[in-house]
Length: 379
Ligand code: NDP
Ligand code: MG
Image (tube, rainbow, N blue to C red; front, side):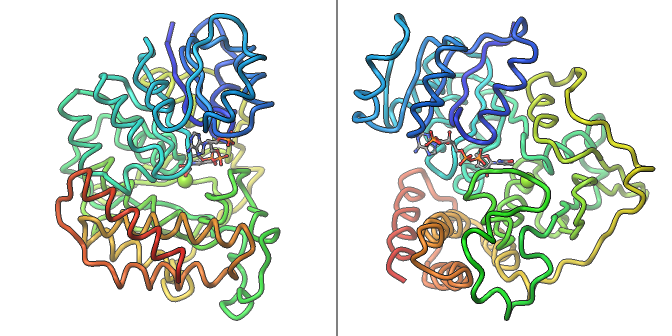
C-alpha cells in the first residue's frame, strides 16, 4: 500500500493523479490533499479519498468549506497548510502538482521529512534547483519526474552510466501558435492561446507552451534532475508529441521513449517506479501514426527559449527571476491586461535588469523572486 499526499489536487496533474489512484484503489491510501480555491471539486475529492489532512488556499476558503467536511479530517489553509499536507502526514510519496514557485517550501519540507517526490511542479527546480537537489541527495530522497519529457529521459537512462550520455534532447510540440509568424502573434487572444494541439493542461502551462517558456523551464528542470550541463541539452520541434524525449549516448545510439500523449502514463510511472502497471491509456500504433515530423528549434521565433538557456548558463538567481517574471507576465496576459508578445518583452527586460546572486540561499531566492514579481508587474 502506497501512502500519498497530493498538493494541487484540483488541477490538471492533480486530478489525473487521483484518476490513476482510483483505477487501483487497493494500492493507495491518500493521506493528504491540498488545493487552492476550487472548493466544489476539492470537497468531492475529500469525500471520495478521505485524507487525514486537507488544505485550501486561504482562511476564508477554509471557513467556507469547513461545515461540509467529513468528520475527522484536519483542515488547514494557506502556505502553511500546503507545507502541512506535504510534510506532516504518514505519506511516503508526495505529488507536487501545484502551479508555480509557491510549491517550493512544501517540496523542501517534504524532502526534509524523507518523502519521495513525484515532481510535476517544475518551477520549484527552476527557482531553487541547487537547494532542492542537494537536500534530496542528503536525505536520500528520489525525485521522480512527472513531466512527460523528463519521465521519458528518466526511462531512457534506466540502467545506463551517466558518463556515457552525450546529449539529452527534449521534444517540443510547439504549442498553440507553432505555425504562426511573429507578426501574426501580435494580436492573438487568450482563447487562441489556451487551445493546445496535443495536451489538455492548466492555463499557465498552456500559455508557457505557446511562448516556449515551458520548454525553457524544462531545459532547466532537466539540468537539475539529470545533472547535465546545458551544452548537453537540446530541444527539437516534434509536432505530434509521440516521442516524449530521447538520450543519445557516446556510441551514437539513441534511446527514446514513445507513447500517445497522456499524462496518466508518466504520473503512473512515478507512482509505481520501478514497476510498470497496465494503463487505461490508448496503446500507440506506429503504423496508424504513419509518419513523425521534426524540425530544428528556431530561437529567433521563440526568444524565450533562448533566454531560458542564457539564464540557466548564468545560474544563481537568474533562473528564479526568469520564472517569477514569467508567472506574473502570464497572469497579466490571462487577465487580458497585456498582449501576448508583451510576455516576452517583460521577461527580457526583467532578466536584463537583474543582478544575479550566485549560489543563493533561500532568503536570497525569496528576495530575487519578489523583486522579479514586482518588476514584471510594473513593466
Ligand atoms: P493547474 O493550474 O491545472 O492546477 C494547479 C493546482 O494547484 C490546482 O489544484 C490549484 O488549486 C493549485 N494551486 C495553485 N496555486 C496554489 C497555492 N498557492 N496554494 C495551494 N494550491 C494552489 O496546473 P497543472 O496541473 O497544469 O500544472 C501543475 C504543475 O505541473 C505545474 O508546475 C506545471 O508546470 C506542471 N506540469 C503540468 C503538466 C500538465 O499536463 N498539466 C505537464 C507537466 C508538468 P485550485 O485550482 O483549487 O485553485
Ligand atoms: Mg512537459
